Length: 326
Image (cartoon, rainbow, N blue to C red):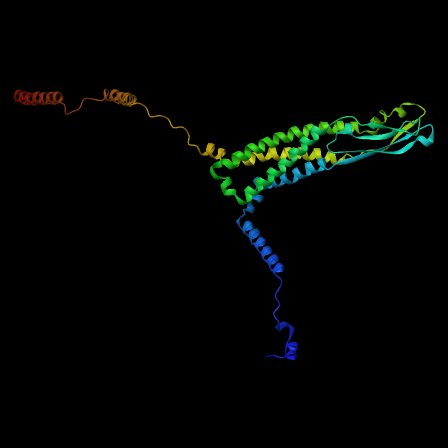
């Protein structure tokens, strides 16, 4: 047995160190996750993202996020000032805040009455939540569908193209979203115009009773910043162009064009047998009529007899004329 001094003299690297079980479990779980990710990446067909079908779907995914995020996360504020005849009753920093979904009739601020130290609540006018929420809803669903479609393109593209069911379903859903983007973007553009009017400081000042008296002065201090909402409308119409344009590339994947181009031309039905017979008789008539103009065949019997008769008469006459001459 080794003594205590011998054990202490052993180098530290020769002593086996065992990591705790929790660390081993975390390392194994990390390796398992990496294996799953590697398998998914290996099975995926990422080249589909380089063709218009997949590339436009990626653009739809991004612009859908921009559309609903710029509208759904908006919050604005404007400032007005009310100067009363009695300066102690004035309020020069009235802040009015509003945000998505733009139920402005629920937003209010306290304005001085210029008659006492008390203030009265002033509510904004209008409820434009329907058009704003509809626009955001279409953006969220478009984002979810784009995510699902990209997953199918990358990992299940073979099943997507099987029997053209995938392209046909994709074509129908994309057409519906293109129409919805048109409706929601137009409705939200109209709603945004009304929001700008309802939150215009000059319009809000007219609702304050103290500002209707000539002895008091009211003015705007800060206008609301609407650039984010303007951008959301622009993103909505960009999505309309993307989804409507993608219909053509999805339609090409359905194979309807290839079937119409490769279809053989219609063949004529063969004519009836009687028509062939009549056609043959008509073709033989001109040939027969031409044969009628030729001289008779020399091999005919009547023609041979005439030649022999004429030759015999000539032979009999010659000796007769010679004997007379003698």
